[in-house]
Image (cartoon, rainbow, N blue to C red):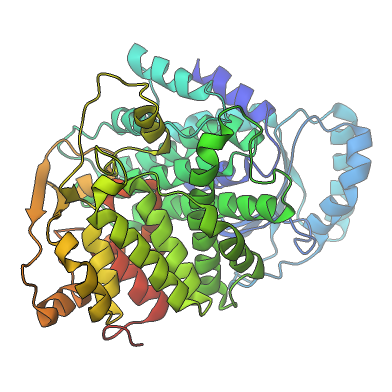
Length: 530
């Protein structure tokens, strides 16, 4: 069954779509990936470069579909570059000449294989390493072997896998179902695991997610693809933390997840910049989701630009600045699960030098969160309700759901501390009467590793009563050193993941995480200063 799924997946995707999972296969086989191309004009025939177990560099050129003589003539120049051009990459490499590999997820026809034999004879005479081919059939075997024992075998697991696999790629990611499937495949109920078992388990997770996102990739549903890779990365961390595993056993898989998530944001940025969709889906329900879509895009585009600025020391992206200027005012706060997207948008505004606009936006959110009855008679839906869930509530599509959300907030404390770090004492005083009548809610998982799972089975829901009156010096101290509530140090060590995580897991967004991100992005040492 799984072999058929892998074969079907490989035959339906292009070379860019199997590049990341093929890197995972190579890592599983003992190679260390040191370069992954962006498929630009400067790649010179090398899509992937690794260091093999014998210390020799391997260079791979990936193609999709059957390779006949017509296709071979088109790509022959790239293959010659792959074989003949030396490696020239921004990484330190061994001095040995590289081994070239030509990979296709389809069949390489016999006339092409004959042409490659002739090519190899010429390379031999020039003392250049021969070209090795890998076709679709060999890829299926290697992908299957890379999973080891971490594949769905039980009927329930197979059913859940197939349901996720055939899901319409245009739909939002089914995060709860994906998380439940990952938990069963990883067998997180086991008390102990050896490091090599964890290594194989997380590698299998990367491959499984590649299969499950195939239709979303095909339909350019960048949001769903981004979220799926962040969920995968989070479950890698959950597994590693639960079994106290050294990072050398999972860092490669984690890096591939973050690379795939960043690529999804890059694709989203390109699509929005081209404005092909005009930010609408041409759906009868689009009027209900247009505002939330603008909110989500503000967060995702902001995150893409913030990471780009940190990684490449570049200036803020003009398109993201334009998007925030033109569309943020029409965005919609649908509930507390929207709050992290606005937090990231505020950070993007601040990075552009528009700190005052960010403060105004956060004040508007604070005012709304402190008077939830103005949002609706039931209050503001908590962060466990996504935009579609809120629409169902508002449109009374769930008549049996009578949950009320008044008198408490998961997001208000974060908004208060955001304002305090900017020394906006008077602004907070104006709203403090309303703030003091809303309890701050925080869920703290019982075990450290459960911070990374979609739903923690054990934990404590903590309530904090705002001071009446509130000491400014105490509030300032809390904003500069918010309680971590036992959150793993990983969130501080890996701020890129944390930035992505709070948008995908909005119910985990807490003041501590936002303070981590501000320190990372702006280097705050005291409130409001850098």
